[in-house]
Amino acid sequence: MSIEPATAVPALRAEGVIGLIAPAGPAALDVEKAGQWLRARGHELRIFSGVYERDGYLAGSDDVRLRDLHAAFADPEIDAVFCLRGGYGTPRLLDRLDFDLLRANPKPFVGYSDITALHLAISRYAGFVTFHGPMLNADLLGDKQQPTESSLFSLLRGQLGAGSVLAHPMAYPLTTIEPGVAFGRLLGGNLSMIAAVMGTAYEIDAEGIILFIEDVNEPIYRIDRLLTHLRLTGKLAQVAGVLVGDVSGVDNTALERLLKQTFEPLRIPVLSGWRSGHCDPNLTLPMGALVRLDAGEQRLVLEQDVVFKP
Image (tube, rainbow, N blue to C red; front, side):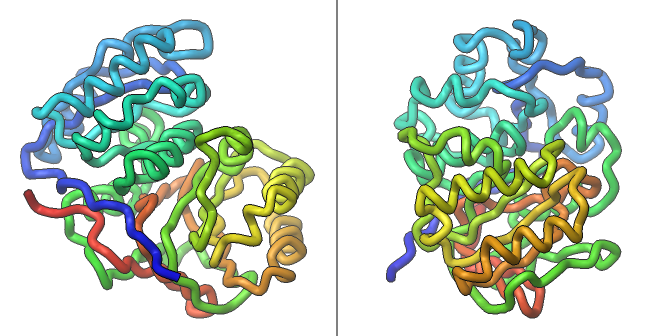
């Protein structure tokens, strides 16, 4: 089977401008701290107006959040788009996204949690690599430990290309649920959000992928229910391998047992414990990119360049 890789995006250039949007929930932002943090790393910050708004549990109305997302991609001076936080809100935007605009203006797009819905939609309909990685407020300004920051910028700046191993900190041991090697596009994100968009035009395209999943504040029976839902839809039977990120608040022994029950019959490689998601550190993963997962050797290798130098 021929696997089509996602299109690489322009690398974040030195002194490039970071556009900050809030496509999901609201959060207070220390603007001065944010600007100083990025300037110390050689970048300027452009804050889109919806970041300052609040509409209940949403960061501004759907119109405002959609406008900012489109504007950030359309602006030729913006080199990368960072999300303020997750929460909830991105599914409300999916059927109004201008994929022609996104496809014509690919650039690094970074976020996780509720942002998963945008990763899935962009992968399916715009076809370029996005980045499941730290958000400005809780992660980067929240002083999450390394390699949170270095993992993000090494990918965005093109310091890691085809053949590079995506390093995992030794202080956090990984667990091989099922050994083996799989090759495919890395795609997924928050398990609850993957399940939430099932049955829509924006559901995950699971054929031959390395499925990445993570979640937070979900008891083990709900994780079971979510995985069972994906199994019953036929999606799990389509995947080539599974990378399990942080599943916060769940007993590791119970999680490993559930993962074994779920994936052993599929005879695919499964590696668990990857520090990506609602955790510290929070490592960046390139969504849509071709990777090689060796669950036995506990290695994840890039099989394509995810950014290019314009």
